[in-house]
Image (cartoon, rainbow, N blue to C red; front, side):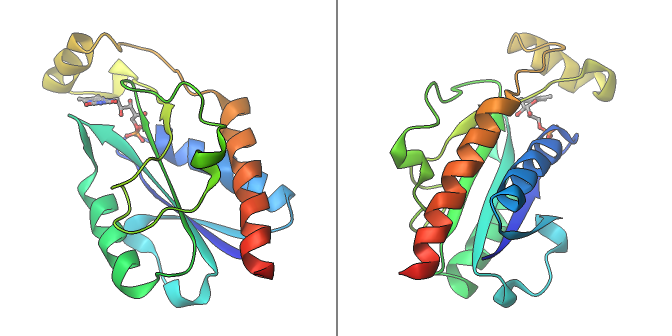
Length: 165
Ligand SMILES: Cc1cc2nc3c(=O)[nH]c(=O)nc-3n(C[C@H](O)[C@H](O)[C@H](O)COP(=O)(O)O)c2cc1C
């Protein structure tokens, strides 16, 4: 299956995480492209999309929400998986079956896994640093590569099923 991993990332942590997803999907035999949501081209050529975004101030990034709307109008009913990365409300058991299922529109409106993210104070301005400190997430990398790759392998299995259905 030809899969697009589309990602919205401000400081690169979610983009790197999406790269782990891309690699795991490719190892499972899919043809995978990783792209920032703002730079996606040829959307109609893909068979499936995995869309991910960082969470800032309780919200999915604007570019990701805009891309979700684009998927809803241009891509559905092809399968779409969704994930987020953040430091709060991280999904305790992201490998449950329900998180491996494609989402129904509106994307980001249903149950998707939130993977732990990373905050690097060195990348932040004073206001953002204060906000991150307030959240208690200073200088932490809570991304769990093994779990993220395991989730991607589950998505790969579901994508195989979708392609024979
Ligand atoms: C200023 C700021 C605000 C944040 N707000 C939230 C938030 O509301 N909820 C959350 O879960 N994570 C929050 N985070 C954590 C980020 O989502 C996390 O660091 C993410 O991995 C960053 O991804 P990125 O490097 O791809 O932009 C915040 C981080 C910063 C620096």
